[in-house]
Length: 489
Image (cartoon, rainbow, N blue to C red; front, side, top):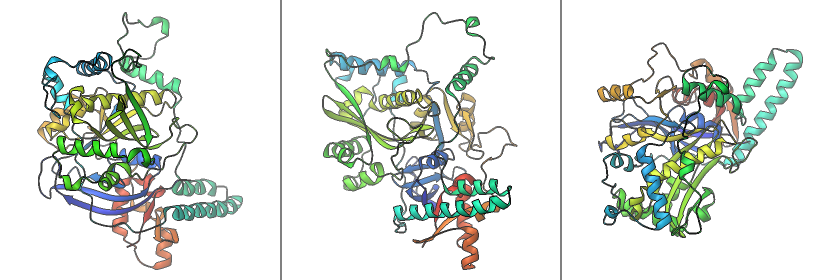
């Protein structure tokens, strides 16, 4: 069993990486020792995001540059003309080894000045790296804590077997308590046939008709997979993409990976060379609280954190850091060799990651979304994410997904923070209320795992009550009662 273990840091204030303002970026943060993939999926569906083991949630109603979680339905995704140009350009380069005439003298790191559409899409700037607090998390033995939780679950099971025998109504309560401790590794999923039917109905906007009554298109538009054709023996260049578990440090922390990361940060982001160490790269983009695992119903590669490595003729030219979760592939970071900017590797990498989602969805239908991190409308250079079709923004108050439309963009033009959900009566269905506090699980000492109710009974003190409530409201009731809150100073 994998249990999520976190230590909440509270509200954070830092310099903004988007508007460069001082002490105007507002967020909440926590350190994750371990995150069950199901819990992290729930967290990003509430506006959280990770950088290494640090998880943060922008205070959109207070921060200078509101950050809206954005995702793309990979099964409904349609290529734009610009996407197709990028794919054809890559295919031509691999096939013939030739560059476009106006690309021969292109400055590394600069987008191609073509028809105007490319410039906006190809910028593909990564999100600003969050400023991680100086606080040091409490030192705990994660494996030992997991064994404590397992023992706690077995104890509750034993107690409930006795209670249920005398009181049938206790069975439901027992089930709920156990769910509060153990992540649901196999959440209910729709059948593939049902999902295909719903997608077809949503696309047509009318009830599903029998196949014989549907008009078939005369010409089938080429799909993303059609453009990503298999390599041929006659190709001048060979591109190989390898998916590597982030925990495989012998492949993710090599000299080639670090040299590429350092070059990218210096040329593209003009970063401080002193900050670009192997330890910093490992801390931000290799370490992960997600435990790599394979279970029934997971993709062949399993769930967890991965690096997609792009090898051109045996040379590493790009790395995509991604998390594969029960309902999505989440893009964490992407860095590439600036010498190959003419191939628009940032956008090409995004298209490859969408293709990965589409491939996985063939086996795991519930995993059909591509998460791009944050959409920052108030920062023009970060609006490129909204150019992908079938994109949705997360309402920061009700946590429902809404299509990213021109009307929504106009509202964000007028006011940088919006609730987004037009239904004024809608509420957060996963809202944490004070009455749920007693079921929050705490790690009070390295050897003690108790519910908040038992903690109060044993100690007679409130145990950081306000901080626990604030954290619980941010992560939602389900995660608050399922994850383990480290309550140690």
